[in-house]
Length: 398
Image (cartoon, rainbow, N blue to C red; front, side, top):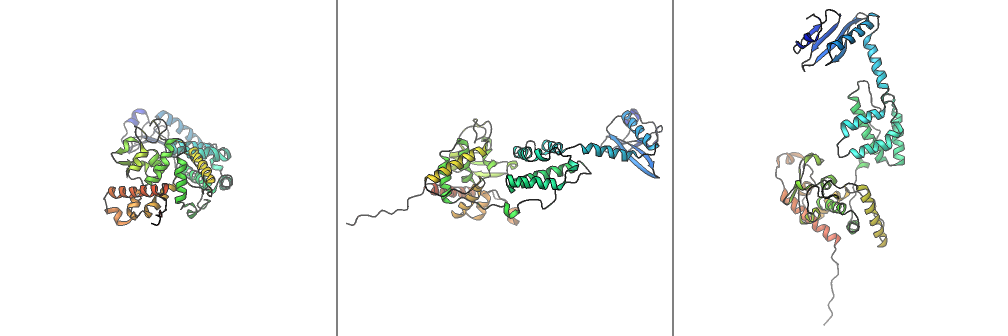
């Protein structure tokens, strides 16, 4: 319909209806299926009919003012659509890498378990070098040189972590800018999947060194976490963030959001684990009486490594090779194999998904089998850290 675009006229529009203003040629308003009002200007340039979006959800007065300005440009022979695109590009040219990272952290990283690690990588390694660069002017070579420097000063693994964060941030930005093309392409990683995979598990000798060093390490909450990791075969966040509300008699139920497979994970609590969990409400591995889960793993791990090194040197043993807390999960799996735990049962203890038809149709909880597996694991660990002397007494000949 053709009539003056006024507030009363647009308020009466139903979804799908459109008004063409009879005072300003080409000025139109349409009620979208969502109910919002969309304003636009139709004009002719070089014999071609064009459509310029003005705005959605603005007042008719503001839309008319913008349409008049665009119509004036068209009357002069200019293309308002092109002029608008040039202004948009000029605005985008002032946006820096820091601006994009700020938006990415706020939108996608805030509140995640990895927030502190991601922000630390960006603040220490990325922002000082390329943070002030305009995002549309950032070249692939600049990213490569950044990663090269990180790999040289830190490690190739750290460089790949930074690459992963930047790739995710740039892809997030690309969903908000039609003209942006990420400078990151496949093949920029420093390490292959084979190099990234680890097969480190602690030997019996190393387990004894670890267990002994934990007697001298602090804080006490950290030592209980480390021992619980070995005795439960769980991931770090599954144990470290365990709370009293997740305990029901002799089982612990880890919610899906804290499990890598995004499925609820039930862990039987053996006597060995119960002794580590302790009493109290709130978080069970805490330094503030359950108010918050333990933090400060890096400093505590450094203290533990120093104690292990000192003890092994004193006992005349070779230095213990580098290890991570996640290696205890692999160690526990290996010990269950040595203890004769069936493969399926051990994999279910780890919370792994059983592949194939069995994983789909076998809905048994396997809780008794998992309990038996963890009890066998506890026996294995106890036999390692408290070995029985392999000495047979010789009785005097009569």
